[in-house]
Length: 391
Image 1 (tube, rainbow, N blue to C red):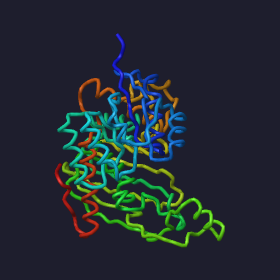
Image 2: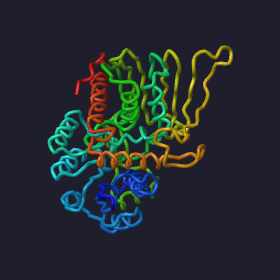
Image 3: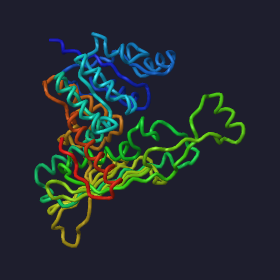
């Protein structure tokens, strides 16, 4: 009996579009999911020739230059939203209205209000909807979740996490969309902080209140202009004459109290010189501690109480055939990387469709994360501990 086919329409030809395409391109062969994915169509806002070339390069059968046409197509079952934050809500609402399943990149939206609207829309339409917190899909993270649920850490005391990058430290770096609040919603808070907030919610539990602050180090940047104007700027020394105001945070940091008594600290910045994608967390419990760093993503750091004078952290290679999210990959010790997390993510989306359940993480998980980010932003304004809204 032939498998059911899920035709995918991908919105977005950029970095995330490429990453998600990697997932769709490899999931059938690696995981043999209960339904077969077909890379049917991609859309982008770039000129037609660029969208066409991107479709061919990434393995898509067809292309559209208007995402609305793609969503309206009867031959599309799943809409993948890999576009900038400011269009997530509009695209998700259109997809839900059309009865399509949805995979939307994080953060779910630019605001808590928008995230609530998106969740209500998918509930009303009764469609499957996933929020793309891809780091959850790393086998080492899944192993950590398994250990916590089995009680191996005992009573959990601390969660601490950082997400550090340095890609906008140059004052001449242009005013891209990620540095503009109407388009990005926030800066490091939503871009990086969303990942570590979601990781805390996933591994440790709900957060009840936060106390945080936001900081913008470079408040004005060169405005992106036309190609011709940029050429003139380079000819006269490489500096744009016109500058615009940065309206998001460069760094975000906060303390948190969890509903189960755990305490946490978080830091997200794009000004950590020398750090490229340093996503790292540690959890301390009464029986054991564990830690994970994405740049060494196949390992879980592990310490167990009772070792006497030989106590210390050891590295556990999370590539065993019994490790969650590993079964389809290589022999033990043959590591995977960033792209394979997207393959695992797509596998979960397809499995959820086949099993008629919501995927994990769901839109509701994205909403819970958005509530934490919203509370951090409000705390930064009031300089007070702030309750995380219940959602």
